[in-house]
Image 1 (cartoon, rainbow, N blue to C red):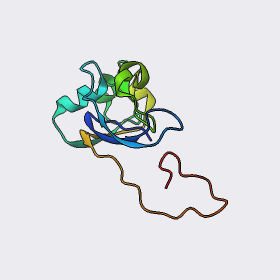
Image 2 (image 1 turned 60 degrees about the horizontal axis):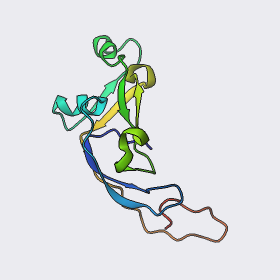
Image 3 (image 1 turned 135 degrees about the horizontal axis):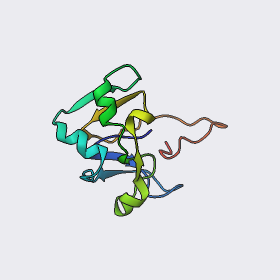
Image 4 (image 1 turned 120 degrees about the vertical axis):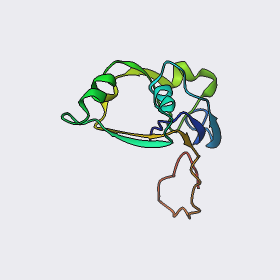
Length: 124
């Protein structure tokens, strides 16, 4: 899952096959979609980006700019190289959900049964 957020925490690993940990998400870059969303000043929102809906907004979000991708691996020290790419939100998504600040997930306690796959990266 990718998170679109300005700041907060995330449960992620530093590398593939590394243990998951709660990491602080750096505030978004000023030249990113995340900074644009943060500047709106609304804690959370949903944008319908399907053709035929919100035409003026779709046009504004068509311009390529940096978008941050945070997944199961997060490397804050190399964030620009590791987690940002140019994107056009209105060309990439049918909808966009925004949370200005997020909190890391808390894994539920489970019992792994013999023969089941791991729940990597959580290793419950």
